[in-house]
Length: 306
Ligand SMILES: C[S@@+](CC[C@H](N)C(=O)[O-])C[C@H]1O[C@@H](n2cnc3c(N)ncnc32)[C@H](O)[C@@H]1O
Image 1 (cartoon, rainbow, N blue to C red):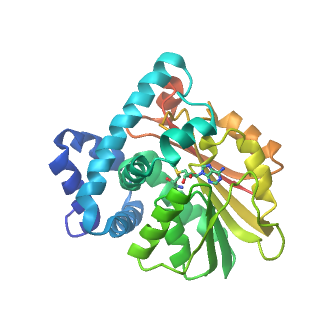
Image 2 (cartoon, protein in one colour):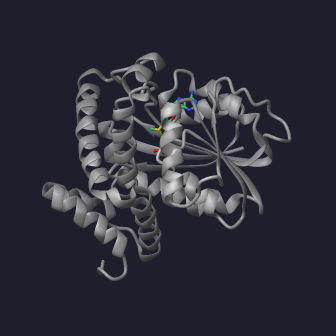
């Protein structure tokens, strides 16, 4: 990979390895095997991540390193006990969502991981290459739990996007999404709403019907993810597509709902009254799919449903 063809990706890797030299091998593993087209898309991803980080890329990279440490602690617990440390929304809310300082570092770290973790870059590629091209022109887009705002900014900037909205249950999270969108000049272009996906106050109907709904890395944060999907289904416009990105066996500080394999994801989606149109699996960095499944390492599951 030459410095000239992927300048933002190179820059990001340089900042990370300057701060964390031992992480260099992990980074190489994460990007290994991607072809030229995917790498060009990942360069665009890195450009967006650097833009969202703004002047503060070093701080974001420090948050990324901290996040990897927090994830390792959760992984140890999962390995020993076979379950996530937390199981209720109240616990996650108290420890993470309502803790502004924790949330800020968490979202900063997660933003950087979008490029550096294989399962996350794969999610971005799938979102751009499989989900967005399915939407009509113009499309109405809703995202649940946009966090760092990466997916939301890609959808909102898409030439065919007629409307972009996002809902989140956490005011702190929405504040951070708003700040991220402002950094990339999207302030005012996206409507952000405080909404609990379990009990949205917006009634479904023509004013709240979306051609594309994305819910990325949110279902594992919920006590009743199937009911959340049932609730979301009512907001799909006729012919609309739901994009679900949910990790399997993925211990994290605020993950409370454990999905153990692809079959459990399929069952959850179909029991919510949705039809699975496509399903793909992306193992975490350093694992083949078979090895990740054998060792119960994290695998992200991407689903298109209608
Ligand atoms: C880890 S972040 C996901 C960020 C981003 N989508 C990503 O892919 O990394 C999870 C988000 O889901 C939100 N969330 C959790 N429970 C929710 C609920 N019941 N309704 C709406 N949003 C919720 C949290 O506040 C948080 O912003």
